[in-house]
Image 1 (cartoon, rainbow, N blue to C red):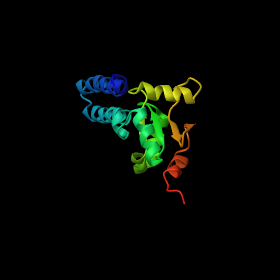
Image 2: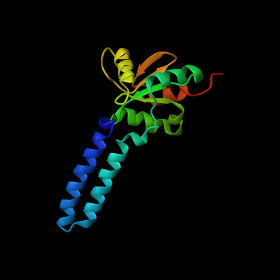
Image 3: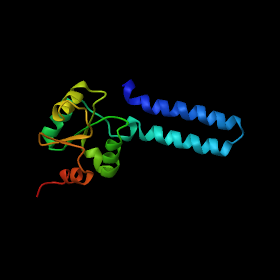
Image 4: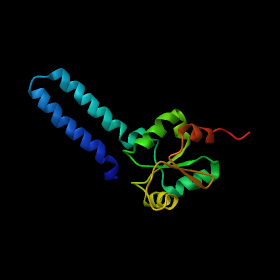
Length: 145
């Protein structure tokens, strides 16, 4: 769990140090703007932006039951963020697995990507797709005719 919060923590610490320096120099407006940017960056790179993660085994079980895709991701991944934001509210309908929290999830991603932990890896009907187009993933959520 610590790994998933390491980037946001570093962003907050660096932003705090830089903001304190600006504040002490008397540049309060710039310091406030700078702090806001670092807080925003930390929030976007935190696990809070993503729907609640489940274990890989639970995601596979749920996917088998409801047919929805499983998304393997990790905090700080810009491609995962792009997928998450472009899916909008539909992202909540997917089963998300944080590979930094779940060793079985990381193993599943390595198995699908020739030993690499390339994310996002989306599994639809037992087949893995690495970094798929968000529009394609959205189509997988539509009910079959």
